[in-house]
Image: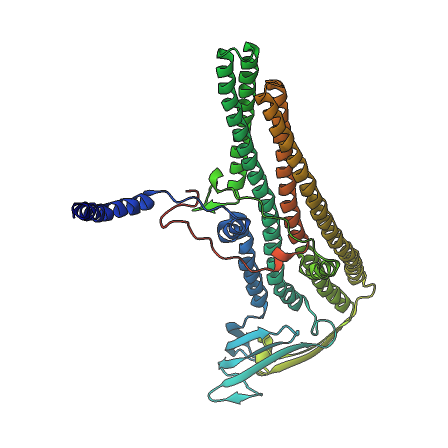
Length: 495
């Protein structure tokens, strides 16, 4: 019975302590800082799409393209005209004077096909005759038109400028794509340089910690008389050497952070990422198959901004060539318009009609324009072929970089494995007194060098993947990525 009472007492105490302990654990979990989320290359690209000033500056090309379109359309804008003319003269053979004139209110406009027309109302002033299209009290409908039959029909400078302005928007898209491609490639290269520097700093810090721990061990063994005092000096010198290298690695990380900040803009200010956000290298993926590579090459010949830019230049040059060929034609124009010369008032407010033929004899200017445009067209054909072959070479070069970097990763990993084996063996021999601190340091340095070779190989592999994406024009045809989200509400990007 006494034993049963003690069990009840202990159970009650445990139940009494449980809520307080659970609450304390919850508070501890809430107060513990969350680990930083590793920064990814996709997030970097998202920030470039969102706020990079160079990409925003390239986006103004769209506004400029709309301005060019409006400017070209201004040549075909209807114009409201109000014209008043009065002529005072003396009748022939008499001393009688009179004032005759008109007030015209009309709308003039022209079309891209070369036709110009006008329509309105004329109000006569004074005793004027109205032989055509008269109505009301001394009023007249006035119609006019100008029609080129050869030169200027369908093809004319104003229409050519309108067609060029229509290509301004695709050209702006090409510039934006080119800027985006270049920024994404530069950001990918800088991103992996920053990750490599962070990994290098981590390796050097771990190596420094190992050297400091060994120094403490050697100092203890030296006091016990197990090793010579010179081993303490050797271990201390190695600590200072590794500390100096770690300081240099810290500076390299800071330098890469500043370079990386030029791709991460927040509130119109570059933002440097923290070292803690440096991610691990992703595992290698399969090399693209020959079928995929062939398809990517064909797609790249269409999507790469360099190819699209040459295509647009060719279209602009074709417009110039058509205009130059049209200028070789003789000018044959038909015109009908209300009579506007003041001396015609005596005869009445009527119409005039005309046909004009102009034919340059030597056609030097027009023939020179045709030769210039044709030479430009031939040049663009050669440039197009060069750009297409350049795309093929870029894809092959990126593919070669991927394959060689993947082989380097495998070789470097095997080298690191062997270096670690030698390092562990040398440490074991040192614990038995069969070797010296110098040889242990040499083995550890070899391991650090091997690990750094692996880091460089992994970084080059990721850069090669980014180069392949750039070469195939994936970033040029993809839509802007999603906006990044802060890790915590109210937290800035770098925190």
